[in-house]
Image 1 (cartoon, helix red, strand yellow):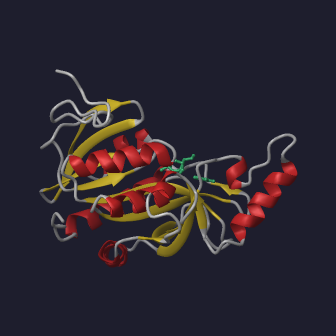
Image 2 (cartoon, protein in one colour):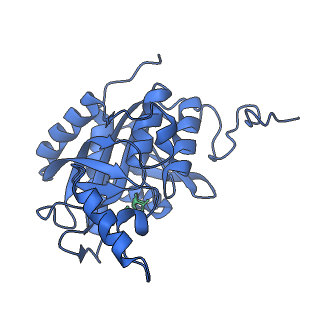
Amino acid sequence: MTRSARDPWREDTAPHLPARLGDLPPVCLLPGDPARVDLAAGVLDDFEILGHNREFRLGAGTLDGVRIAVCSTGIGGPSAEITVVELARLGVRTVLRTGGMGALREDLAPGSVCAVSGAVPGGGAGTYYSPGAFRTASADVLARLHDQAARLGIPLTEVRVASIDSYYLGQGRPLPGYETQAAHRFKELQSCGVDGVDMETETVLAVARAVGLRAGALLVAHANRATDAWLEDYEPAQLAMLRLAVHTARVLEPYPAG
Ligand SMILES: O=P(O)(O)O[C@H]1O[C@H](CO)[C@@H](O)[C@H]1O
Ligand SMILES: O=c1cc[nH]c(=O)[nH]1
């Protein structure tokens, strides 16, 4: 069978994600790190890995009988765009990023679990979708995250983020010979009205909106850039975030197609 370069699906199989039409439930969590897909086995029953291709590791499990998928996006906007576009065509209706961030606010200690209300535009691949628009999380996803956090006793802070397709200079980390540029860049980030930085949320929210999906983002602070603190024992914080994510996914009302 000859594939179209413009639309390189092989019948019902996605070009990048290891999945075919009909494989996935309507809700999918989106960690960046493929290893976080395996961690989801700690918060879901009957968890199984469905496939792995490049940075895209895909699994699914259940909570109280509700099936929930987990698919890693890899790092940055380009692979996050691919993930959201292909998940939409595979029949997923709601995506929830479950990622890490660098907090910019001093009071967000490493390990803090944060619900994203929105992301400022301009940081990555999301730029190709509604350029200049502030990216908001779906209101019902945000509301359910707060409900479930209260029910589970997980402290939750609402944040705005910038997603930057550059971990080092773009996030103001100094490199030899680039110290002044990095310091300037860090000040720029501190003054753009956001509480944290990551690398995918903006793209996930922007692309999801464009392809008709409901979307939200839950981020855990892996680091605090204001206090220069780094969380070495990261797994418990990731598990708290994943626990909140799956309980939220379980109670979301179905999101009907366009
Ligand atoms: O932990 P994840 O979800 O990958 O998220 C963060 O960690 C990576 C950088 O180390 C970037 O992907 C960033 O967004
Ligand atoms: O500093 C950080 C930590 C996690 N993720 C990022 O993008 N930056």
